[in-house]
Length: 569
Image 1 (cartoon, rainbow, N blue to C red):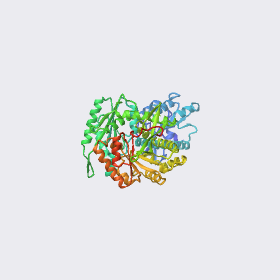
Image 2: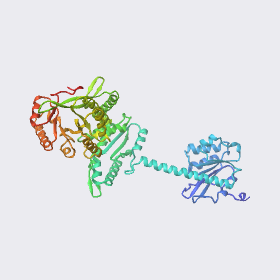
Image 3: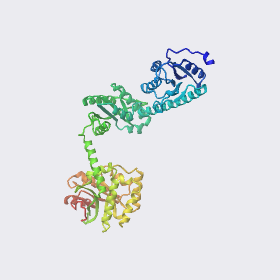
Image 4: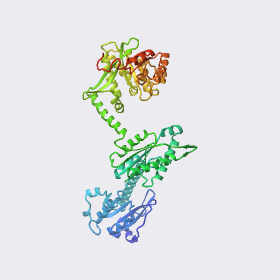
């Protein structure tokens, strides 16, 4: 036969194969004729416009020597029985477990059918195919090789895609620093770690004023400086839009602080020349260090939050003594108590009388929320912040509103209920209140809704919609705490208000403080012009009431007339 007349020289020198031009195939068999026949059968083989590069090994020892130098073979055509009955499987184990090569396709060929590997071995080592030499004709060898190459190509493409996805996962696309995901992984790997969290103050202002392309260029410049400064290990991450982390090992608090000061000075002193702009940055820095090994990033974020509260030298270490920790613990405590109180019906309404200044007669009541816990009654100062953070404000408002409707359904008195900016941002809030009034046969115009704002509602579409609907339904609207924060004259222009409650800080000492009197007179001047009623709160004495009455305020409320009680006077 022609195969017997064609002889190939043994490759004693291992080649480093360029995979861009060839598919590399390793033939491992102790029978030289098998090598000859295989090379002849696959001589003209091509797949994806690439030919095969066939390398021979004639023993287990020689095969392992070749694989130690070149582990990039696409296919291995392997005989099971050579020096020993396990030589082939030893090579498979070396490839899969020692070299950790999961992609090379392994085709076992044997002239001894009794030495076929068990099914569990084929599965464990991901052996691509098993053929007896007698059945592996040229055509079948061609087909088997083509199938193995197609599988290898598919696995290779999957691996490249996986690597690209992983790269995108762990590398920030703008700065090319590591990402938050990479930080999470590194925190599991490294021990005795310290984190320096750097945040650019008011970075959103830069984006809004100059556009995101300018902001991105600044982020890139900051990243370069951080990499250049952190020459220790270059573990630098961008974890949010304007927040960066440096991870350091085995550093004392003093070393971390010293490094942070140096870093802050470099970044703050730098002039950032971006296009035609010259900008400077301000920073806040939070630091956490072992032995706070648990939730180290969260602790750095808490320290950062605390550093923002400082006026200067905005660098803060995490400590259990930080004021923010006390606030967080308090919020957690009251959030739990609130949830329990709602379930047990321990959210209660108290009522404080409001008198008409001219007659000194009680004409209405304000409904005030209280929380009962272990037989103690708590005012909102204890739990209002926790309710806001826990998203329970509107739930509480609805409870209080319904309780008020039930109480005032048995009389003709008017009453007021506090509502929040959160309430006004809820869809169908106006209809909910209207339904409560219908349930208890309360005329809507008996109810004054006192708006408490922590953030402005002037530009909130849903809030404005609810306000319009509440007015159309006949409810009266009042601005609470008028004269401070968001409760100011601009609201009287933009909202259809029936009354304002002048903040107690101006009323409680109005008989003694001339500035409080001037501010109150300014409020009265404007409200009278636009026909808006006024209520004075914190009226705690006859002297304060006389001043309030003389100034022309319409209504008064405070301990001088009665404390909040669970029953009407």
